[in-house]
Length: 557
Image (cartoon, rainbow, N blue to C red; front, side, top):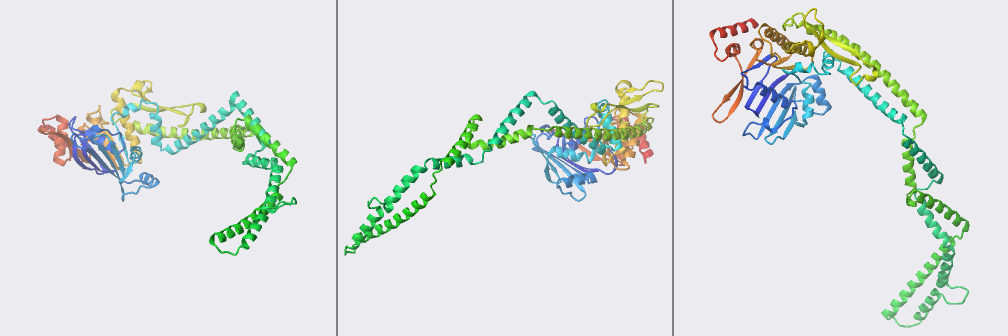
């Protein structure tokens, strides 16, 4: 329920604080006074599009805040988004700058306009004066029947299964109608992958083989040079003195010199270190030469393997080192294209199962809709007499379509027909009902659907346009009865409707020397009589119109 509306610097409104109670409340005022401004401001708080024109002239920003009581659906919505509830209330606030930028807040947290609109639909329903035009739109009848019967959950289930079925069916059709190009691509890819599988290149195999080939090819040369180097360190059977021997002779001769000169001692130390280094070099060379393997057979194997790797790499125009990664990529590509007959058959089975599930759910939904429509037709007709529609008949027509023509909303095409006069054929609303009749039929439907709504706050924006007299009074009674279980806010020009309200608010426009602004006030009993008298008789209120107004109010009390 809407409990408070705060408007600052919006359009012609300077500052307005509106407390709204349960029951039926009406807003009246002269044409152009600004009744629509209040609903526009509320719409902004509920996520409507904002622009700079809504900011009052001379102000830097407009701000609207709407406070609602918390219901179960809204509480769940907040919980799913981790937005804390402020005790038992929800506050939707919108700020619009003079430049047209807007910011939205839900309980003080920044929120997108789309989220505010989504939450607003759980808190309030707005029935506009142009709602009767919606009755002529394609999907309106289905939406109203579903809303009246509370079938939204069934519709969601049907929609979900339909989406899954369509997605799988499209995928299946694409695979079944696979192009020759795709088949050729698969054949080529299969050949390439089989060749790579047979070759089975290792991730680092090329680099390792190239190193091994280099060692094997140079084994003889490495062995010969290594032996010469070791002979230079240790000596051989040629009789030539080796480096270690010469170094040892130098050390011995320096040892025979009886002098401790620093330079001489330094030379002795360096020669001793050199002797040690030569010994270690010789031992390392000896170990290395023991590892050198002259293996022509292994060399041939390595060169043959490298030749295969190089050949396949050239064929695919890549570097040999890239063969392994290329092989893995081709395997993945083939797996993506390679759908077996068994897989296809399984997919066909799944699609068939989803089709049957959709048909079952859609059929159950169709039956539920027919039951809902029968109840709705009866309740709508029950209001026709009060709306001066006499003995008119209202009927919901169903056309069941083939499953292939069904959609996410089921297999029903639903439309409204009306018989305005007994003995005359029934026909579509657009062809049979006049503009005034269409407006009254729409009002009856709105009253009926609003009565089953889970939303506690209902707003009717001049839905009584085009009616008057006794019919307007009966409309007022209908709206008052709706407000008995919740909250109804009605903008009206009809005094008969206004007289039925529990609370009455008046909108007026005040023009000063430099500015014009709209104000709203709650009327007391005397002020209500005067306002209804104005609505009955115009600007000049006579004793007769005032008496008539007081009589209308007295009958309600």
